[in-house]
Length: 273
Ligand SMILES: Nc1ncnc2c1ncn2[C@@H]1O[C@H](COP(=O)(O)OP(=O)(O)O)[C@@H](O)[C@H]1O
Ligand SMILES: [Mg+2]
Image (cartoon, rainbow, N blue to C red; front, top):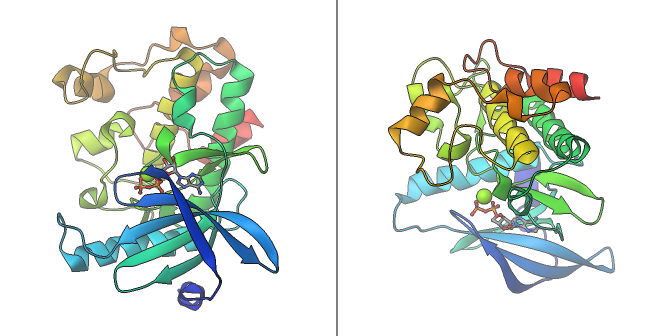
């Protein structure tokens, strides 16, 4: 917290350029600036203080939560680095490391080799392990929040907007606002606690998708709100025969319905390293 306050307003000339992308809450711009006398590229995420669909106290809480959690997790090579945070009367400005590559979304249309899929999943698992060690659940592991960095040839996790600090390893159901395609059975069933195992489930969906080119529980023509899809996520076995034998234990461990029996991220790292 103290380091986060310290960062707000640290003066440096940043020139904001083109829009890279707009997400749910913010717009991300490409930017350049001088750092220690050298011109550097940045991504600047601008979060507006006022949003028509939210009370300002609630919005302020969410923005501070995003900034503080991202700040807590900075320094890991698979987490997008947050350099500075600025604030004026209209916006928060998150000055982040610029990752030149595409998001993981661009990889989901194809079937990848086992080696390639595991390499990507290891990058994400390393980031999540670090985030969980900081006592934070990410809660929004999805392709749009995973970006390829051409600087150091790794995938990196970004967007702590949905993340939450845990109390006794858990967060409340009411704190979870994740994307349904990557939501765990415990989110749909509204029972039990939400923990880091929720992120493990989302990673399992990504791993299956990379290996097979499709979501394990959804046909492309069915909507996610379709009861059949929710029923499949909460009850059906994933079609494991579609994934290579060697990775089946990891896929089935991550896509275990019961969070108490699901494969923890630490074990994924152990099994795949
Ligand atoms: N550090 C970055 N470098 C390059 N592109 C980025 C960076 N951060 C975000 N983006 C792009 O902007 C999009 C939205 O960013 P994100 O932080 O996920 O915002 P939101 O909270 O609105 O979803 C990402 O999906 C990605 O395409
Ligand atoms: Mg996002």
